[in-house]
Length: 307
Image (cartoon, rainbow, N blue to C red):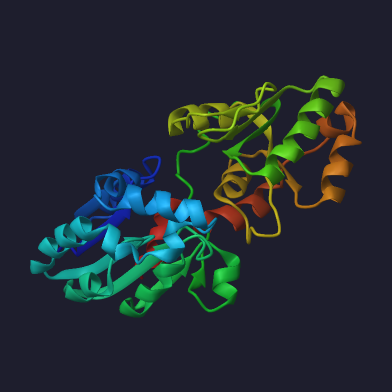
């Protein structure tokens, strides 16, 4: 008999679709509830006025100040409509906006949450952890602080089938001043050493003339295509980031070289290198790669969460 699973997840670069596809492949009877967080917030009559008021008097995100289940009332009501069925498992990804009452009303033998955002960004989420049997988090520091078992995000099993691995340095990510300062220096170094590069930061409003900032997000297919064509992936982390990103594990899995930029020393070491130095770098050996990435392949990742 098929096990019934209720899967609740925000829409994010089609990751939710990959999870649903794998659940179906593994033989689950899947009921999926996916939603667009930003769209739901825009539909909330109170959100925009409250956001404007808060932004005038505080730099603190609205996510820190207002209980999210107030902003996502419609989502909670829609999820509760699915609680009439008895499930073997409830799997919630992220959980922002879902209330304790909603989770308690769902009739499931096992309730699991996977957190793919740090609690520093969405502090209200930890309040619902008590309603789950098990909690996983991709944030190493949250795990150290007792907020779930550490588990990096999954890797799509077909990720590197079209990987070209041309000699090129790649980084595409969300804008921060810290990242921008590093990329300006890296771009200048690449140009001096005649090293091909694909460097980009996404920000809705910031402008620049150096081509490092784009105001519109890129879709996952474009990202994957540009990622696949580069042999060297930058991992630019600050002290606020804990553990490795999904970019890091996907790069290792795809037989790419990862250059970690965690400090000024790391940056200086890179930009004082020559093109010849960089061209001699090699990916991790096969056994080391498999040790790091096999547990994160989406089938193994889901088995870990649902066991």
